[in-house]
Image (cartoon, rainbow, N blue to C red):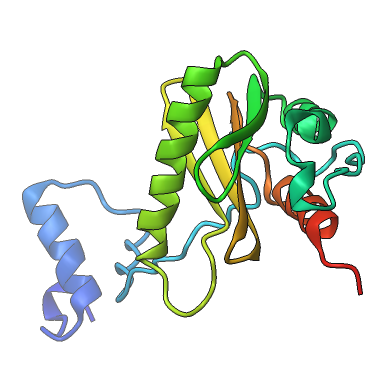
Length: 191
């Protein structure tokens, strides 16, 4: 059977004849058909490059077992540890009423009060987005090269601490959890 006698249902023979007529070069392999669907897969993010790794020195104990123990002398070494562990420029803690308890690092008292108050407002706004009784645990805000990371530690409704960390990178989840554990353990009521 010659190529002229080919049946019209022979698509490969028709393609070759068409290429000869137009002078197109013969294809080396037929093109693969396009997929019938497109797969959208979420990329896995093990770590944010702007977030610190999970290795950090053990935290010191926070010696503030009672409400009358408020004051920077009880928080200084703990805040200094937070700043070192998170490679931060500053760290501070606010009480449930928005008053600065203590701070360490490069920010002045006015900057701490302004950032802390606005951070607490951001937590209040974020709480409106949640469902259930879970508390908003952490917020990270970027300001150019700097990041303000805030975390809250809820002991009870009247004893809530907002901790702010300012630096080029934000503390990772493991560090934030370690901070929360130390504060919660320090203010837990003895059984």
